[in-house]
Length: 299
Image (tube, rainbow, N blue to C red; front, top):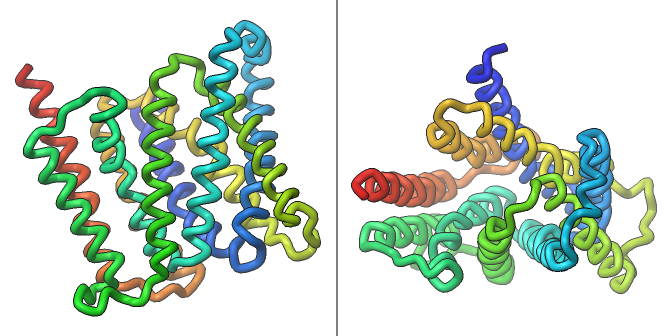
């Protein structure tokens, strides 16, 4: 298979795997708590990443990493998967899957905002307009289309899902500052993240639960596809692509696949306001990318 065709195949798999995450979250959370889901799925993901590390003959590289990098990556693991997913799962536990998933797509907006204090970037008028546009989309979703009544959604859930975007954007910015092999990053990150998740579940008396009550299919899906292997598939797609930017834009089909699966798998009634708000959010993100690309070409 030609590299370009393989890149599009990997992108399609990425869209399908990440697109199914919202349905897997909601299915799992209808049987077990967010804390239990985090502890089990993060351990599954850690084991999977360990297998990838060994199969790629990269275990020896762990011993060559300086102590400072180990510490930095262990701290990143406390942010993701531990902090990010416990907040995200708590949000999904309180909100309809379509709302939590759609609002979570504000993370590129948060990334742009946080790049100002962390990377000392400046925001142009066009970028500010794009950010405002995305936040308008978030308001449409949160209000369920009725701004005067402000909908009936759980306010704690909305705050939590918005907080998750801040945590993920912070993790992304802090992670990119360290030029370390991706497999090593994820292995060390999930080493500390899964350990913290297990300890947190133990402290909350939610570690030892009836194995028969665990929805293993959805939990395995979260651990293998949402947290684990799909990220490597996506990176492979970008590396094979002749035009990575064009390929990256296709990933914004993922939330619409999520909506379709939520409707088909969980029979969740999709609000018109969710679709409209999601389109506005993504329009803001793509507009910002377009203007940023234009500025870079003109420099």
